[in-house]
Image (cartoon, rainbow over all chains, first blue to last red; front, side):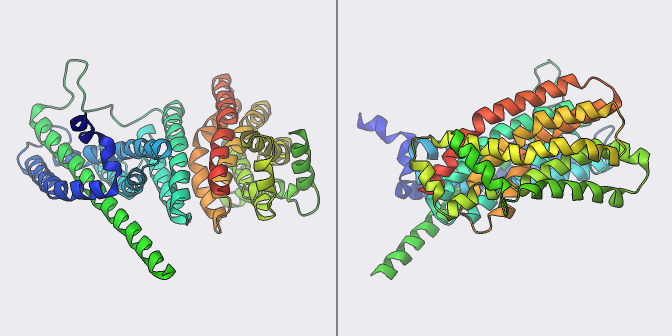
Length: 249
Length: 218
């Protein structure tokens, strides 16, 4: 079944194939991300009414919520790519995990900073030892440790192995910490604001549509950045191989 | 297995093994705290459980990078890896030896430091219980961190960056037990959770540590 095989995801484990496809895909992803971010943020910032209680400060919602979502999803993506590397030894997968980490780190930092800026006028405090806030701070530390380990190990395959194991163990501990923190302190942060399982939507439609568009924009931005950085990593790896070959000759 | 444990223990206890080092560090950190906080005894009572737990955690961290580093340098880690003993068991024994030489003395020293920090009498039992049950988790998690960074040149600093976020749940439950013990409220629930954490960490972490060691020995 040649046709079915051509559609397999594992085709992209081949760096050459990955480079070709990502090169074709990247401009589209960047353009779509720019359109979504532009529409969502401009709509959200200028064409929605001020919230009854929070005033204009509610508009930081359009950055805070998407970056916070992506901060967690970036780690989840690193977990999946780490598993693929450990099980199937596809180099592109390991490099994608490496490429996603700094992006996740920056998203975590943005979520923390926008949260502080939003918390100041609405809660009256920049920082509170609330379970959600604290677990984001811990997630930030996990990203730092993960990136530092990549930097410290010289052999690229060992580095990929060690960081993958760290990512797996870290994921377990991150989840345990999340629930341990709930035990430790009751929160000030509101609950999950996107799902509406209990019938009444927690976010009104006026804010909902631009929020959805900016979330899509941030997801696309993440994809674009990870593709871009993975391409850089692959090129760096090729360059290194070429230099080594030059020296040997 | 027993032989390895006895070897590790005797290496740690003999001169240059750094046996008392963690304990001395714990003492100094705890004694320095009142200088930073102020000698007010009622303030010290509030912060005492937290200080003792943080001190124990840092003291554990201090001796972690020696766990595999010396065996790595003189090649005995390779011998252990090729021996019939599985690497998981080696990691488990190393964690046990680390706990016996670092965690256990801390548990023994904690009551004395509790007096220094004006810990109320009802808090002692819970403090010692939480340290006795919680510190094995610190050793087990630390073994994984030490296995990840073995053979790295600047491993020590990286080790703390990697291990400290993993210590969050243990510290949280441990200090919660001690704090509730001081307040006189129900401390059994966090103690049970802490025990669960220790059991899970001692069961699972040797496997992760062995996986990291295999990569580093390749």
